[in-house]
Image 1 (cartoon, helix red, strand yellow):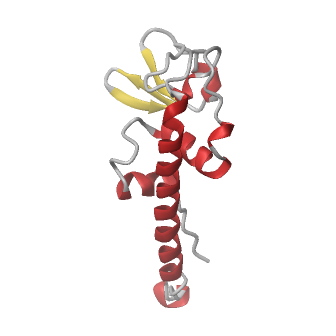
Image 2 (image 1 turned 90 degrees about the vertical axis):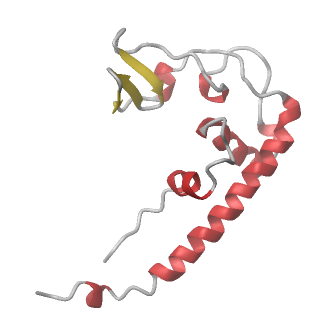
Length: 140
């Protein structure tokens, strides 16, 4: 048996590098409002965790020398490190960077990204299904 790991974010960054220049957090919000409608986004000011901000404030969980970049990503002396933590452990409450008037455009871009990803992944699956594992890896 052969399994392919189809990871939407990596594929999307290659296929649509300019669609979400604001960052992954905005892309994920755009997909959410494309699926659930613009009414699901709570854009009131107040205590939010930083995922909707372009440069959200982050807590220095591991001291002054290990800089949080977001989610599991940290930087130490110029190189990126992965340290598995819950994003909410490093996010600091802050107001959202998304005005309500921008939600319809985000919904449209989220739908566009999903449409393109579904088309690409379906084509890949069609091609991948053709693989004859016994022929690709003959017994030695």
